[in-house]
Length: 435
Image (cartoon, rainbow, N blue to C red):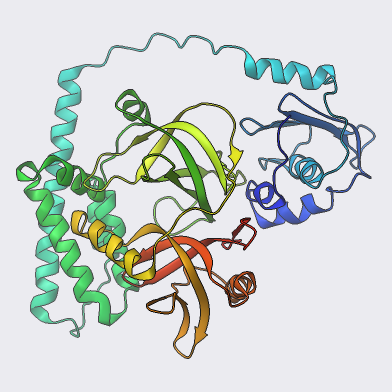
């Protein structure tokens, strides 16, 4: 029988806060009838404003959802409400037989996929020409960016710059270098004191791309990725994969941000291999009104294969074949001291100079509020807390979990501090601090 999820995990699937609030009203038994739970699926009928109740069924393995309501949000409030009812320990009939409308949909999900239509054979020569044309455009864009940065330095950081960096960012988009465009776009929001460092990193990246053919392949792959080249998921999964029991360290879901992908919601999920000790970052995206598809419960172990994106310090990965369902981890993960965490970030930065932060787990640290802000200390060294959008309530919640005693905390450590994501209670239960 599938182990029930936590309320926190269910709410992480919601496409927005309004859906969370609406689902909370449907988390009691009153509006539900005909509920059941068997073979990794739950279903039920939810009373709505009409005479016919909404039919809701959920495949927990996906998770995947089906509801007869007209909502364009995915999952809808009825699916979330049913999940909250189930996760809260409601006495849904277990090992029940699914009604026809639910069973038909579940069988359809289990059916083997149809063979895809034969694809038109790609023209290798044409593909090579397109790749060469793009490489030429990116090289020209990188050269222009270096000239623009040199010009700004020549006139001095305090000199009036006229137009902002938006025009230069648009030029990088035209040059098919979205990575450069994104970093350039951020310059208009960078404080004066940090501009010189950002100029130097951008100049280094643009110059590295111009000489990418002379670099060692791992570093060359990092430069291409930072500039904006991507690798297809199918291509990654066709190559070497890493099989391990991956511990889900935490997740963070952020709403639409500036730039070209203003309509996307992004979910970041951090993993750590129980055997290899390797960190991994999975990214999942959702359209407006739709939560990102990938959702893994924090604090669980998943036997699976991952394929890493190439780079000098591989971190981002894609999820391949899963071998079984996630299982709860018995204890909090092992961690580092603040001094060791700083050294680990320094090692990663030596491989990738444009790295802003690196995932680490701190062990036996206490959150304290100082006149300079929140810090995490082990009594010998301390790290400043980088808020990264965390509200005051989240940090006070962390302090309440600790109650003045050492705790384990996972987050991202970088040159501006440590951004907490997950904390473990003394009993070993994970708590997501980003919600």
